[in-house]
Image 1 (spheres, rainbow, N blue to C red):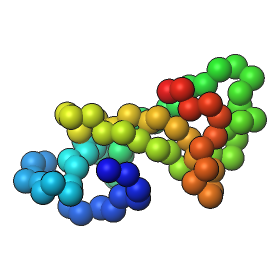
Image 2: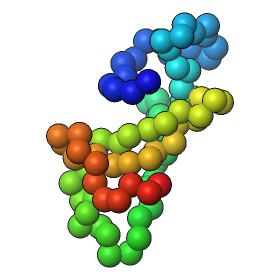
Image 3: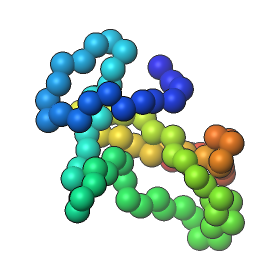
Length: 83
């Protein structure tokens, strides 16, 4: 798979087709949060990631999203992406 994803439904449990991926989420305050709230990189690499606007994720079998790369506004990967 790959490409852009779109929101289908917000449910505690749902059946899914082969084209769907269940993504674990958390309720924080008044909103839904998907993925991590932190991203760590080596000291001195901040300029490389300063213009990040999007994240690239892989979804584990249990539905947990894992951030694997940061992307700029044009969806170009930033840094060496060895995450």
